[in-house]
Image 1: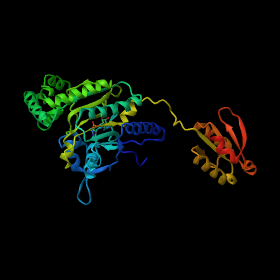
Image 2: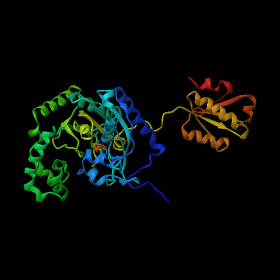
Image 3: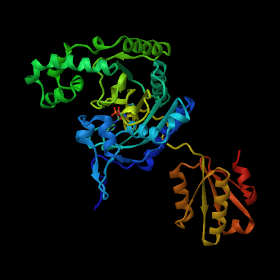
Length: 414
Ligand code: HAM
């Protein structure tokens, strides 16, 4: 075979699509109930948008972006995440002026050149939300509650919420210095990556998966020691509001996230079923990003959830798409026109109609109707056409009755 999907990318085939649609429908419906509106942005953007927001020393920007120089000389990148594009759009279209509390959600593909494995692809999909305009803890909690609600609706079990606050800018600057001071004596014991991070982004070392590094950081200073009074009370409110909504959480002071724009609340939903790639959803507050990208200072918060990972942990109840359908068996060229007209009329009445266009025999068309799981077949042959009548066959019971052609739509609309 000459061409195949590129490593780390996948076709979503017809037999999988109804699970995707089920997931997308739940997202549209629940985001709607929370008063969020959908936004769609282009799949590629100026490279600078990501290096400035996600951070040039992060894995995403330094190793994983699909970037190229455009013919006009500009530097472009396939979006590796959607927060920065949504912020760009928020600023560009003055969305903050239109509504002081702007609540947006999205569904779409993202691109990161990571090593593919279960739950990790180079083209993957996220749904997510971004809210602009409130610095208050109730907004963090609404966003977390929305994600929690969607997971519950999808029947995802064994999922837990990890929560942390990485404080405001001042707090992080102090904590960064404290962490460098603590880790420097261990520098030679650290991996090459962590040694680099010690200079560029020491907080990311807290995220390490290497056992002996985990041991070292067990005794590292805690970020909570660097919180300002406001950081502390903000985070306490987030926790008490979550408890008030009966949303369980675990505190994890090493949850720093792999993107640079966060301030204060950070969170992740992790699933026990997923193995190494266990983060189903990640998010948090990013109060400085709008200003950093050239907008007016605007507090903001949001999350994004990986749809492939959700589908891996989603229990699907039914294997079919659930549509009631009819198979229109048409026999012979003479009936083609009438069959097409009948199918159109039924479809205009909201009925799903399969129709043979391979000019197959009766037996083959019946077999196909059974394969598709249709319960009723309408049979139209030359004899029926002459009499303006059709046969309606119940494929489960095997019974058959004859009805007038002009009564057909009425017959099927219950
Ligand atoms: P993130 O943690 O980089 O955050 O990604 C969010 C989720 O996307 C992850 O928890 C995971 O489920 C999924 N994901 C990430 N990379 C891959 C991959 N290579 N293959 C499959 N799934 C993947 C963000 O993207 C932030 N923009 C989230 C956010 C929104 N923060 C505030 N607002």
